[in-house]
Image 1 (cartoon, one colour):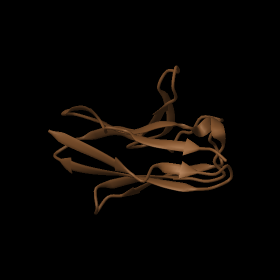
Image 2 (cartoon, helix red, strand yellow):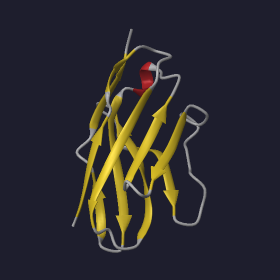
Image 3 (cartoon, one colour):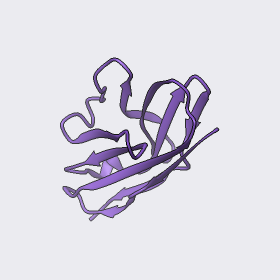
Image 4 (cartoon, helix red, strand yellow):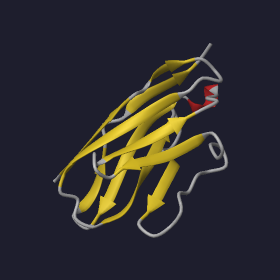
Length: 115
């Protein structure tokens, strides 16, 4: 069983920055991919950043150059550094870990970008 706990969300002004964290506990087995997703009100959940075990990090054009995925293997934690935030980045952000023992999501953390 794997548990993922996000933190770091909040209210920020346009142009500001936030760093989200996702602490993992449990035994994930072999991890195939992990990443961050977001869901805005009335919209489908969308990929924000994803890394596989053998490939580069993938970002959609909407966040490319502004968001950066990070990982601390020793701490079993992944991060999402978000810079130059825009109002359209407002959403609940989720971390995800998909591996040989299952597909796990965090509970989500709210990010609101507003003046």
